[in-house]
Image 1: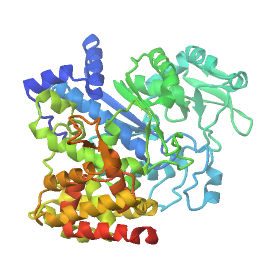
Image 2 (image 1 turned 180 degrees about the vertical axis):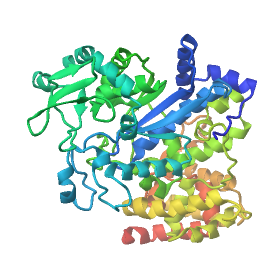
Image 3 (image 1 turned 30 degrees about the vertical axis):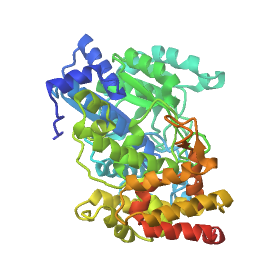
Image 4 (image 1 turned 45 degrees about the vertical axis):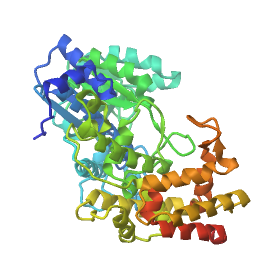
Amino acid sequence: MLPAIPSTPALIEAGRACTAWPFEEARKLIARLEKKPKDGPVLFETGYGPSGLPHIGTFGEVARTTMVRNAFRLLTDDKVPTRLLCFSDDMDGMRKIPDNVPDRAFLEPYLQMPLTAVPDPWTNEFKSFGDHNNAMLRRFLDQFGFDYEFASATEYYRAGRFDEVLLRAAERYDAIMGVMLPTLGEERQATYSPFLPISPTTGRVLYVPMKEVNARDGTITFADEDGRDVTMPVTGGRAKLQWKPDFGMRWAALGVDFEMFGKDHQTNAPIYDRICEILGGEAPEHFVYELFLDQDGQKISKSKGNGLTIDEWLTYASPESLSLFMYQNPRSAKRLHFDVIPRNADDYLAFVEKYPVQDEKTKLMNPAWHIHAGSPPKVAVPISFSMLMNLVSVSNAPAKEVLWGFIRRYAPDATPEKNPKLDELAGYAVRYFHDFVKPTKVYKAADEVEREALQALSAALMAMPRNASAEDVQAAVYDVGRAIPRYQDLKAKGATPEKPGVSSEWFSAIYKVLLGQEKGPRFGSFSVLYGLDETRALIGKALAGDFVKTA
């Protein structure tokens, strides 16, 4: 049973004015239902093409749709029933053989067969290629705890769940062709049909023109692969629709109220809508999201393999951090590369930490509400992910257990058992640093000014008590910087000639010389976490040129 959405009158009222995108979409859906009430549950749908394994885009679509569903549930005080249907287009023909199968030659005889008629090339555990990937989808969605119903196109077509609308498509064949033909080139127009019959002789999905569409009998006539004319019903899974008409048909047959899709579908959305209307349905509310880009700004492609996979993300950060990435700015194209992981890991923790003390309006703008369906957990993490990575950097910790020696110095009461989220972060930090940060580190040899400044910083740390606070250490870092002309900033807010500000160049020098990277942590917090004596030793090694030699 779907857990209830925590609500109060004040929270519902805040939701009516909330500008977070899931609430904006939920209000559109409520306005639609006010114009035309619905007897059954409100239906949210997502689509999946099982020609490949579920991927990060599949996660994003289901996660984002769930966020809209949760906003809708709050605004209706959870009194309007809802469903989330994850629909698999597993009756599509296998147009090409995937690169990741163990034996490509084994699948060659099954090209153009429905995906649920192609044997499972991996394990023989499942009846078909499509069934294998459908099982992977369900396992994938269950891993993240989504509330959903699974639907198979093959089962729906064969069970007759689309028969009524398919017969209507035969009746209104000319109207559908009138929508489709203007979108096609001259050569394709000559052979196009919205119906794709399944060959009774070969079992393949056929892209052939119709010789006759008999609306009275609900049949189609076409030339089969052996050249003979075949007449057969459009019902019972004997034929399916081309993908664009299939979108609209499915919306009409199932009464879909909301479906989101990527920008690559945007130009086709009017086609889907019109066919849905021709077939007697009302097009659902849409949400179009931008596509992901790789590190070079190129569109991510499954065939190219230039994207970040779910498993790769979850190797280095939590599922919640991935949900945050999906929540943030879905209408903007975003780079989906390894370097976005640390920021999302830390931002997620910051949002969850702020949530309990926020008012209703601010809570609904907090991504934590949307990630956790209104019930964010209480998470105590005294050290950020980025700080842990910097700690790994200077300690070269091979495992998270080594990090805990430093963590206890900073947070004496913390333990892996009492702080499982911190322990989890420590493991992520070790893996991320050794795989991505360490290979790119470039240490800078200190020039004379930098050498003088770092020696002064070491002396300041030596003079401080060993239990000095992070704030006290940070103040000492500033004092050292403002005493050196190169690092003085007279334009800083509140700066005076007697007490100038400190330029970012000082901190950049610290990071480049001591850590071998462009950016770094708040140095006061880092020094307390790592230890003042250890930090002085780090400065000594850097000034001796040890890091440059090693690099």
